[in-house]
Image (cartoon, rainbow, N blue to C red; front, side, top):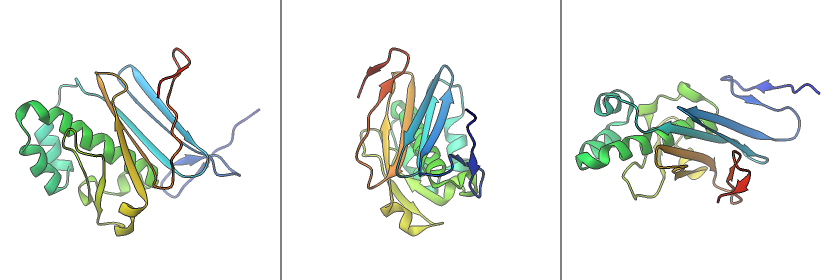
Length: 168
């Protein structure tokens, strides 16, 4: 049977009919698919060993407060802070459906290691901070990932499809 897709205003695909939302992200050798029946979702995964200029990218794309938070982290924590911020931002704009129509510097997320994942402010839509929650996790030591879900969502199950077992 053929699968048909509908596309939102900014090109995000969805399935027609009953609400059925999904999002996919991949980086290096790992991919993550998130599926949810009731609310839009967004996912991002990043391989943390990429050779990139963290502070240069942060200066260009992060909100000023995020850049300052990153700059004030100890040198050994900056890579973790950077990828916390990046994956949370990407997951949020994917869940929202507008993608890069929302400039990454126009909203703020938490980024400090061991700080709860949070959408802190959104200039483009101030009510969004009350609608979305961010969940960060490490699928393994080489990757950082984040999931953006509606605040009403409370049923998460994680599966490792490579070995088909529940991994929480």
